[in-house]
Amino acid sequence: MLTLACLPPLASIAAIAISCASAPCPITDLAALLKSATWTDTAPFASVASAPCASTPLGKDQAREATALLWDWHIGHLRAARKAEWSAKSITRGNLTMKFDYKVFGDKPAAGRSLFISMHGGGETKAAVNESQWQNQIGLYTPAEGVYLAPRAPNDAWNMWHQPHIDHFFARIIDNAVALEGVDPARVYLMGFSAGGDGVYQLAPRMADYFAAAAMMAGHPNDAQSDNLRNLPFAIHMGANDGAFNRNTVAQQWGARLAALAAADAGGYPHIVKLHEGKGHWMDREDAVAVPWMATYTRNAAPERVVWLQAGAAHNRLYWLATDSSARGNRLDVRRDKNVFTVAADSTVNSFTLLLSDAIADLDAPIIVRRGAAAATDAPDTNSDLTFPPPQRTIATICDALTRRADPAMAFSASVNVVLPAAKPGTTP
Image 1 (cartoon, rainbow, N blue to C red):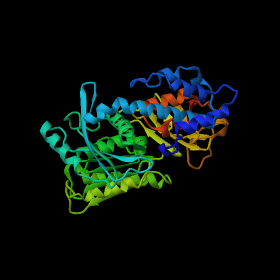
Image 2 (image 1 turned 45 degrees about the vertical axis):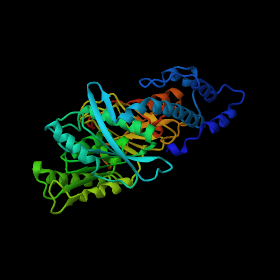
Image 3 (image 1 turned 45 degrees about the horizontal axis):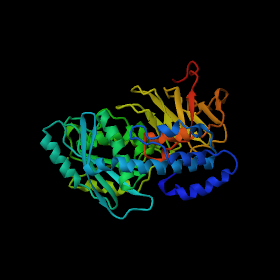
Image 4 (image 1 turned 120 degrees about the horizontal axis):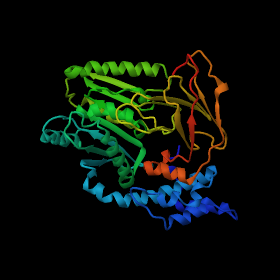
């Protein structure tokens, strides 16, 4: 897995580029290009991705070198561009503004700081009530290390933490924290109390690949679905006597659902459910144990299986999958084993893209995509395998990934567009 710590400095990249010798070298061209390339916040790599070297196929080492060069160039510009926004502790998107406050705890680890995003309670009430809840949230939890950040919901609706704009605000907060506070993108955590807990139920599945773990305190899932939590450790903390809206009962139901998913999928759906005896909605801070529990986890950006159910706000990427088939209820379940990607029989999405890097597959070998068996006792139909030639790593692909998020572990260097044939009659779907 590519991390901030393993990215080589520019000096070593320059030394490695000597290996290009007499042949035209896309890395040498890229290094020269970045000295004069134009960066903008809305299209940071536009002048790079259109250059001739951006479409030149790269070797494995060249892809790593290109990612390091592009990351170093991009994060420097991003840091300068977002400094005022971060200092103001306020982000505006259209007609909505999200304020936030944060505290920094502990010494900064070599790989970067942790980030805890902590959502306040409240809801459909007076702005002053939600403002008070936000101020309370700022001091509610204390991690041993990391940036503890409490955002103020942009509006005062009952569903203030799971409206579609929240996803965009949080993605920007994470990028800003990476650039300005040296946060490690693999150690970002989501948590929330009461209405903030509602948000955790909803946002954790939608943005599962952004977080290393999530903790829900005293909330209600409403129509949230748990399918996408396959690779995201998820904690539920609830007062045993918190019966409003059946929160305590629903928490146990969710726990049972996660346990069933975990039992059917070795290594999947890590979770913990704790009903605090004798406690109502306020758990006298007993739920604070979720903070060190989350901190034991680091995100896996290249899990062996991705389960993706579109629910709530639509997303077109999750881990190493992308699709434009983002209608609510669409399901895509893919397992990888080296260069073989098996699509579960109950997947309803037939057109998608594999987002690839050398951490995910051997990009110098063919990629095979097959549809899984309809029943666990059946063997997959390998006669219908789709075999793709080794995908080309390119600078343009890396630029596209880094434009989407400031996360080098998600800086995919290649992709494969897949269109599965229709399932045979009598099979699912």
